[in-house]
Length: 365
Image (cartoon, rainbow, N blue to C red; front, side):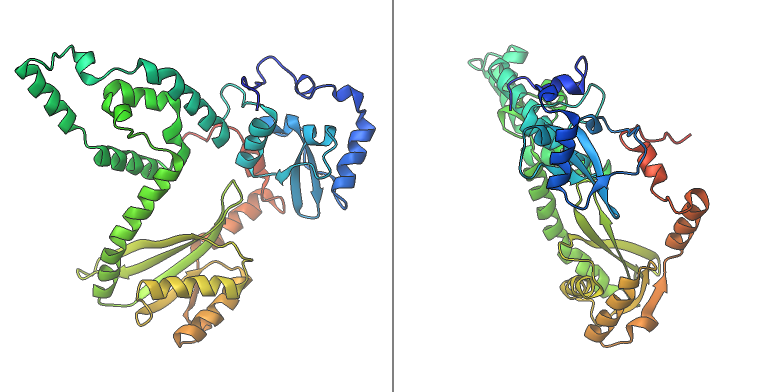
């Protein structure tokens, strides 16, 4: 990757792909569709909102839509880099790491670019960092100043600081890489130089590790609470694919506590790497139910209308000793959602998502 990444502020796509005129449009098209047999130009509108579409071809095959890197095609790669059209993070990370293309000003940066800038920031500010004693002008050779300095040093709890940061990320639904933002780190360092001196800054992997530790720590308390519930434990589960195409499955419990107050707890959000068949879904759900020792307390299941949920309930019922179809309820929220989308968008249910992609979220009035 070049030392100074390219931006879109003053340059056009053509200028960012060197000598593209040497390979005419017909030859680039031939290379593109030779590498992706069966694909055609996408039938989606040409005015695609994401800035990264200036650097990629929009192609499709049946229901599969891809972004294909223009620079890779120009260079004659046997298999040009292709990403799912909704996998924004994967696309912008490829552009930055492989071709040095930065996000335009005001647009979201990819994780690779954020890490790059954070690393450069640390290299720049590290030599300039001063200790608390230097900032406050304390002379530790004097007993009073020495006591003040020691009190300040002891007042900073690295573990507590990191827990607060992680709690903020989770509550605000921020990406784990947010902690690597150089501006945020500058604020932390300004407020307390001990953050940098004690190496308390977090990266995405350490955020994930701390969350896993907290999950393991509190898992036993959740199991004990569910065991004390006087009635049955009801289950809801559903799949979701993130913007980076990571398939996740969430499992929630609904029950009444000892004071007969309704309670809800999420017991798992795990990756389902295999195909979303009923059998695979059931295997994951049964595993989590067993981990939380709920086999003998299971009540009913509230699920959406997907056919693989019917199959999943057959396997779950067989594993836990009941008729799965008789324990399966329908999710009213899901029924209302698909009804509203059908009324608003007809068969093109992704219209709103396509229109708002890469645009600021709507503000609640």
